[in-house]
Length: 287
Image 1 (tube, rainbow, N blue to C red):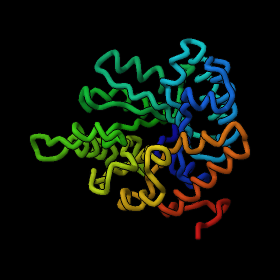
Image 2: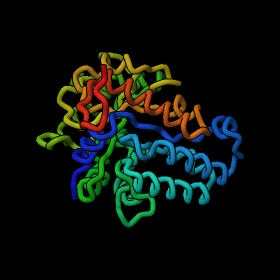
Image 3: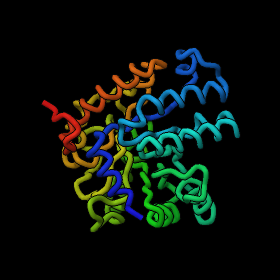
Image 4: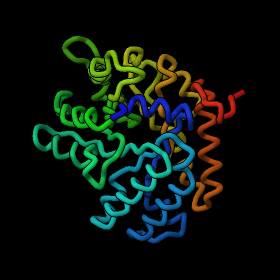
């Protein structure tokens, strides 16, 4: 099985660095003229997938917005995952799971085992039960070509009180998580499978990512206050590894498919210029 890191490098090279979040907030369903039901959710997601799944490297459904509709919502999530992957996008499911022992193994099986209807390319995970508690996720991801993205320095301002706290060795909690991910990625080519989550609004000195050798999911573009210009500052040392994530800024242009595509293309080009990502010949060189 080809590694997640290898597949991600190829996808970003072909399609650009942008990750589009699928976050069907109540206000977005209302703005699109859709009911607050599983049927409305399905119409929303089908439109997003039609608009962007064939042109962005990664789609990131937020599981909570599907779970709130119960089993009908999970059925929509399964369909969204399947359709997105059929159109060539990698799917990063934003679930932020984290537990220990058999529970962690069950969570990992739910998302990283090809036998599951919720099988995706990668998931977000919480390391706060302890980094080794993520071993079931890492092991199953490695077996089936998947990836994990570990929360480190998130875009939530209240999170900084915990993430910037100092450990016994002097490093911050966020840096400790990055260092653990870097150790897991050591020697991987062309890129490791253990990523970290570092918000665009986290600040220039939030963490040292120079030894990560893995991908960085960078939420916070648009509605959360981050811009493409911030990317070149915050992620100057890891430009080729960053996946800037935008959701509401793009989704707000729906339900018109062409408008969604234009918004995604514009954001992708801005991120590409800021990060100086290597392109395939099919993509225009940024000027």
